[in-house]
Image (cartoon, rainbow, N blue to C red; front, side, top):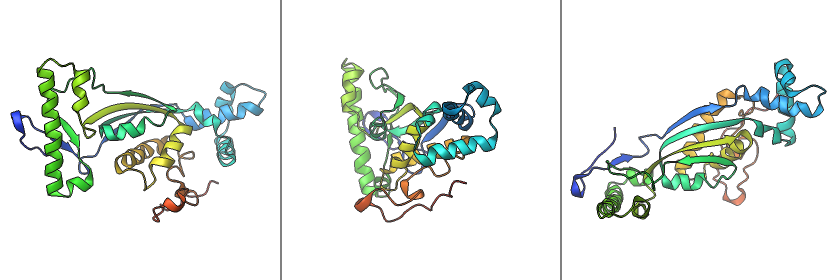
Length: 248
């Protein structure tokens, strides 16, 4: 359950941390994404149209085409399938990292148009949550920042200006759409054990949702160590994931 503690002005802080997982949902994706991608890729060498290929290609042919484009690195066809995720219960610290992945579309809950007048919720990092003294100081700082934010609103300051006081720990919501090529790139970087803990949890949740929809494409998705040597070089964590199965 959410933890709560009293703060000045009788408002309460809802805490979300390692025991309160974020809410990640796959809202939509391209129907039969593997077949759609294979038809687009096969079109380059076919005398018929993509619509006919979509209907007539056998499952074996679809897999053969997918293996060819993935193993050869000719992955532009992967951009013909996309995924849309709804992500709730994450921090602004996470979304600042997320939106750096530029080949994606985003819509985020606005602190300019949404005034936070109810109980605030903050994301507490595990290292803070495990230390009672640090947790107390963390919540006090967040609480004071939010109290100052509320006071600014009461003084007539617009929410778009009062929001400058809100901490990175503030909970937010965001919708993300990525094509598969970009999604695989995102997963490689952010599933890595060297990635920041919160965005790594997000990446792993997104992979878990996407993999059943296109199991052949996502069979070795994630950190680079699942497919071969770690690409982090001297910065490697030294604790690789188990190797993914080879493509047949």
